[in-house]
Image 1 (cartoon, rainbow, N blue to C red):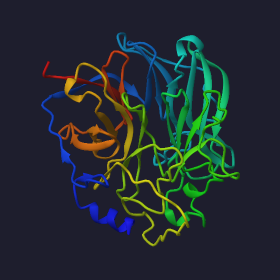
Image 2 (spheres, rainbow, N blue to C red):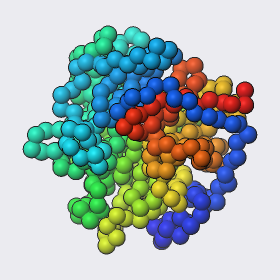
Image 3 (tube, one colour):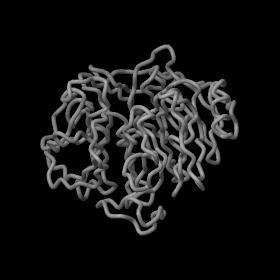
Image 4 (cartoon, rainbow, N blue to C red):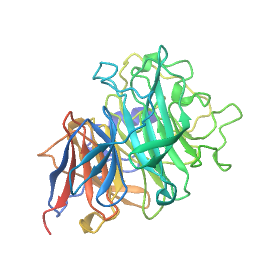
Length: 387
């Protein structure tokens, strides 16, 4: 019955389970985009070292150090050699590449950075991998594996790779289920199988060990699992006031969502969905005793939401603590007002100037940037034209 409700509710603009017709929130602020850096190969993520310097991961390229004032870009040497991307496999349709770059909370003391990427083993395929490295000048050293989401398969889709540190100083990682068609699901779907590393969100100590207070999924469960039922989550971020984590989720035929992360939760894929299936003949199994967590928001059209951030700067005072979400499909850029863990209103920005975007990032000084997912990828500065 829950699945039927979701399909019917797609007829509206968008909504959450408790309020399907959440209103749009028209902004009085006039924002514009300005290209600051270009010539990037599908940038995926950006981590600020200072207000003027940042590390940028190129999905189909390298890990870069970018200087905003000088416009200089330099390659960080020593990236793991098992990385694979859509250029190396000679197929532009896949999702392989370098994903998130994330600084350790004590980066200024230890120079640790975390990287997620598509790793390959010749003859076996690829999987999502997370490593920690020490950044020394323009080189990576002391690389250690934090998470390897085996098995390696020939599917080049839905790696996940989103990462953030929570207020608890634990590392949270999204791992996709990797399948393109639901008809290829095993008897127990990948995202529902606690013995399978794929289709999960992990909570780890910064060194990759398992926190003692993680939820218990049973003796046979993969260590480190924090939540299950994930299809293809890329973005994950922390609310500045509540400290709770929110993440974006890709659907198939529609079904894109925003979710509030809860310990031990099951987000339902592929048993339930707010959209449809690529394999229209697919009938999901019944999992006895399973309790599913509803999304906080879903769209009635495909958005492909990616990296997201809560805004805490001063330039857009009207947007304080609002959730900003970029999207690959239709060049979406969304602003959500959240009260008491509930999305109250939504606004889509730049509808007359769309660009496929991978992530929204805020600098230490509160400036807003957006990464465009293009062959000539750009870092765009989001500016307030009403000031």
